[in-house]
Structure formats: structure tokens, C-alpha cells
Image (cartoon, rainbow, N blue to C red; front, side, top):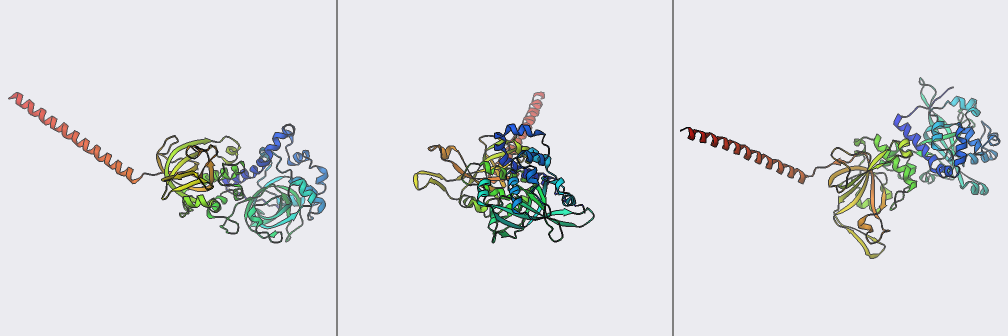
Length: 470
């Protein structure tokens, strides 16, 4: 039989591909800097098999792999060796290698021909097994465990037949932290939507009369489809997850710190996802009870939720992004908006219990919004006074330098909620409307006075001519 996995929508396919490439970026950059000579020499290695052979995963290890049999101890040496090298290829290589359709029959009948080929798998986890490494291997590879994740991949025998599920096993060194809490005796039956750029390792034994291919991967991207208290997912995260964001990346976010390199991927994935979300979709997920107090006190509880805020924009700066982010995720720029929202009661900040460091926000508090677009009537600039409202995903408490907070202590930082939005909207306040009406009435009165003046002048001029004739 010949089977091919169906493609998701175009934008989602690109997003998932970009996410997979991110995992390669995370560990390959430092390696590339240390091994630029090797990278230059390996430019001609156009296949994954040739590339990994150059990295020391050659024929001797490939010969250890026995198809149609479970992994044994001898094969695990090859497994851990290839797992430790999955972060080495540069992103452009993965893009060149990645295949979006799978001939399941070819994997079964001639597994050697597909060995180490990369495939984009999308589906749902069915079972996770945690397995320990021997102490000497744990020290060598920097991990005490590895995981076998069984995934039901979306697959179709042909376009004319009903869709079916193709089960695969993906071996990884790590899984999302929230998944680990579901492990019972090192096993979990968790069912969650995932995507993964996986490297084909070998053909495993049949399961329920179906061959089970074995893959290896650097990471598995998680796209939750439902709110779960156990897994810590909320409605906003589900909305983002179903539009390609890897919610496992949110586990790297740290509050009251600047944007860290570990947060780069989740930040830009969220920005990218807003491009494919409609304003009505975002508005439908607004949680009205989340305010400034909730975000400042328990940010981890509300991460990813959609929050609506209104205030005065004082500065809007266009941030141009020309790195790999622009190529992978389509985010070549965004707008950073410094917004001040009104306070019902004062907010006090101090260092520990030292009252001499007291800083009080009496009437307004600063919020930072990173937005993909600006609505008509809103323009970038300094010293602005623009009333806007925005529905945005709460990302983190961002620490940054400000004149007010750092005036006496240069090391002290302002801590503000950071929201990621699609498009803020211009707001016309009632006072402004009243002023507009007043100006309109004043103009009308001036016009009437002018008209009356012209009429009186005309009449007076006509009367003067009549007097002169007499």
C-alpha cells in the first residue's frame, strides 16, 4: 500500500516548518561558530545520511540497526549517538531535507533507502514512555532519561479512501515539563496534538497488524486543543496552539526579566500567529476579569490569555527584524507601543522592605504592547498622546530601564506587563467628541456671522447708491 500524510493549511504548514527549524537554531549556532571550517567543508554533503556520517554516525552505527525488531541495548548506543547530533545541522539544511509527505509503504519495504531522511509529522500523542540511561551514558550525553513518544500521525492510503491513523514512535531526550507530571510509573497515556521534524531511524515491529516506523527528533512541538488544569493550558494558549504556536516554548518564559534568548522563539511565534488570526477571533477570547493587578501578582497563571486594555500611547517605535525570524516566521517588523493605562488605586514598588526605594504610580501605569500592525489614525512617533484600546495575548512581566524607575539606581528596572497584539484600535473619548461638537458649533456661528455681515454690507451698499442718485 502507498500512503501519504495530508498537508495542513499552507500558512500552518509554514509555521510548523519554521518551528521545527527553530530547534536546530537553538543548538546549532554555537556549534557552527566553533566548527566553521567543518561547516564549509560539508557544504557538498547534500543528504542527511552523508552529513551525519561526517559527524561520526557512520556505517558502523547504521549496521547496528535491525529493522522490524524492537530497540535493544546494542541499538541504543546508535540511538543516543544520533540523538546527540540532531542539533548540529544548520536550519537551511533542515529546510532542504524536510519532506512533507510520507510513503509509508516505502519505509516498510525498503527502510535503508529512507534511513535518516527528515519528515514533518503532525498528529496526536498516544503514549509516552520514560526510560533511564546508564550512568556512564547519562554523563556522556547530559541526560538521565530519554523518551519514547508514540504518535498517531495523520495518514491517508489514497485520496479516494478514508483517512486512517499511522502510528510511529519518536525518540527524544526531552518532553514538555507539564507532560512529565502525567507520567505514572514512567508511562503516560496523554493525548495531545503535536508536530515534529523527525529523522527516520528504522522500521519497528508491527502493532495491531501495522508496521510502526521509529523516528528520532530534537524536540516535539505541542499544540494543545483544549483547556487543561492538569497541563496548565488556558483558552488563549489553545487559540495560539491551534494556529501553529509551540506552547511548550512558553515554559521557558521568565517574569521580571528582560527578553531572554530562550524566550525568542515563543515571542516571535506568537507575533507570527496573530497575523493569521482575525480580530474577531482574538476578541472572542478576551478574559475581562484580568487586570493590571492580576498580571503583576500572578503572571504565570495568565500567560497566553487575551487581555483588553485601554490607555494613552506615549511612544510608538517600529522594530525591524531582518534575521532568520523574518525568513522562517514572516515577521520582518512589529511596533513597540508604550502605553499608560489609568489606575483606580495607586501601585507601589519598592526593593524588599526598604521604604527609601519606594516608587508610587498614582494615576497611570506603563504597559508595553508589541503589535504586528497599526490601525488607521495611529502612527509611530515620540511624545504622543493617542488614546487606544488593544486586545492582546499576555506574554510576561518585562523588566526594562526607565527614567522614572532608574533615576536613583541605574540597575533598577521598570516591570510592566508585555502584551502581543494584532492591531490596536484608535479610541475617540467623549470629551474629545464634545470638543469636536463645540468646534463645529463655533465654526457654524462664525459662518452665520460672516454671511450676515456680507448681507448687511450688500444692503448698505445698495442703499448708498440709491441716495447718491437722488
